[in-house]
Image (cartoon, rainbow, N blue to C red; front, top):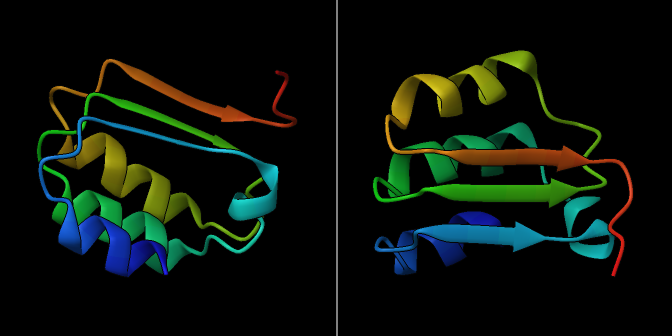
Length: 77
């Protein structure tokens, strides 16, 4: 699902997803963000658990403009 969303919205500059949606995010979804969202500046994900180090590293390597990244244990409103 995340792969489809980011493929359709390549101009995204900010992505924020909370626990209910992040529990299903996989390394493939993170790779999709890295490949499809070249303008990303802000990324906040809460509750992810099945994502590899390599996928996170792909984000770091791919985004020179990524100024704000957060992996939050629990989203607080």
